[in-house]
Length: 261
Image 1 (cartoon, one colour):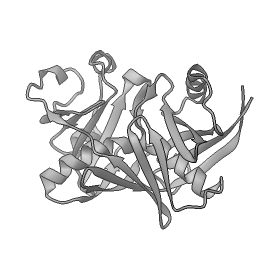
Image 2 (cartoon, helix red, strand yellow):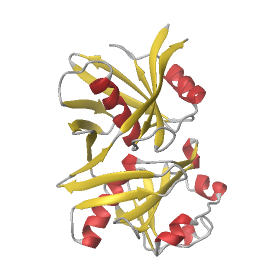
Image 3 (cartoon, one colour):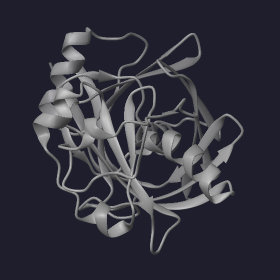
């Protein structure tokens, strides 16, 4: 069996920056779940997306090297880029059915704008559970559907964060969004997910479904410029639109070819 495969750098205008994503175009039928997981592990990227078109609807799934996840921003962006720019999709908006509902991607000039559902977050009052997770202690903490969001005092703390891998894994959740106000952006963040095989993700679009509602309430506005402070850096424009979050970014193709399995 041959599977069409693309490797893109996302949330960037340049190669070797942003977040790498794999995209596998499967035609009209899913392959076996275990095979998708093995392909994602072999790719060893933070996410590999797999999509099909069936009954005139696109369906998308995402796998880290270790597990399938419910939502991924950058690999959805990469998949939309492939459809718009390589595989001949003629529309300006593509909808993906997913485990997180309907996700939309729209051409927006040179960028692609994602439309995702907002996360449902609740405040955590007792912070002692996080005392051994990082070298800095958060000022606030929240729990979303799949991630914790920890709010720190300033950008310097985010930049210098070091994590305790075992402590994060022991809390048995997908990931940890760490954030603060930014010096040159509305907010900054980093994302750690060792429990699902990704110690630190370079640019995490799905985290904005948690971050944007929080910062909208804090700042009293709906549009934001954000920077993910990973080594590869990510630049995102995002906004709150009712119960949806819009996340815009670019992508660059690094490689295309075939997987033989």
